[in-house]
Image (cartoon, rainbow, N blue to C red; front, side):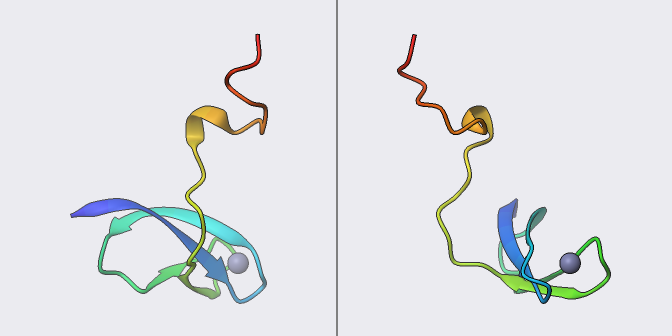
Length: 55
Ligand SMILES: [Zn+2]
């Protein structure tokens, strides 16, 4: 099963990958390995940071 997961690159960048849920590592765009990041999921529908309840 593939899901969206956040990975943290060795350089400190957080990347998002659509990858198998059991994967522990992913390849970052910079070529370095990125390990699975334990963090709050980012919601794609609210990427601006503004509250969706605002008019
Ligand atoms: Zn990287």
